[in-house]
Image (cartoon, rainbow, N blue to C red; front, side, top):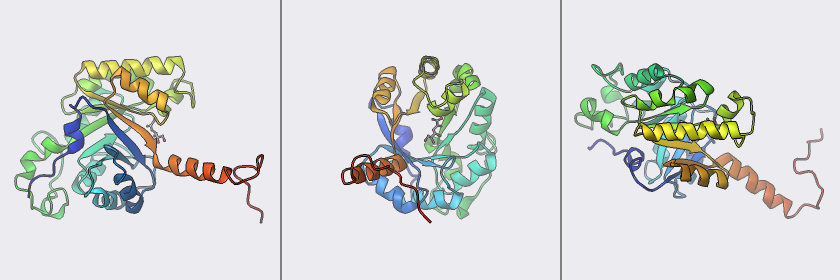
Length: 266
Ligand SMILES: O=C(O)C(=O)C[C@H](O)[C@@H](O)CO
């Protein structure tokens, strides 16, 4: 069989914004529901959702029949974890808290086989090769792999030009929550200093010829970042959608003034 095409990577050069959704439930059933709703991409979050390599595998299998492209966020840029995630078939990885070009270079090396990197060969044991069903996987895999580095700290933004310029880095994703707390504006990504740093990171990434993405569940934010040139934007978080919808539905029936989250009585 052919090496599976990475629709997310291909779309990074498109002029159309790629709309994404955070998938935080950490199971295949919920991931499949999300994949059926038509977003361009979804983020299977291994940093802040309770995912493991097997749970990521289950979600990749669940969403495989759909057009929504899975992006997997690893909890760290550890080369061994990257190896496992690639072996179970993740083609696009997002790595949090990248602060230097050297860090970005080592991530690229973790995703490539020797002599270009250090990835170990799983061969016929791996879903990535479709159990040896993909001819020339060892020499062609890198064409369909995509590396997104997260820039989400003061130092990361200071180094963003060098990070984005690293050969093998396909895109930079800005983390507004971590960046704002790191700049001393906890929970306030709209603070002018945070906004200035985000704009700088977007501009520098685009100037380096790479794609830029961001998380923006608030519509006004998403549209502003789109105007600034972000090509892929996560505009929703599945867990938040469920919670907000559950609260809004209940609020239509409760008496006005009833607490939204009554405490349990034992
Ligand atoms: O800093 C950010 O913003 C992110 O990296 C995204 C958060 O981790 C996300 O989990 C918020 O829900």
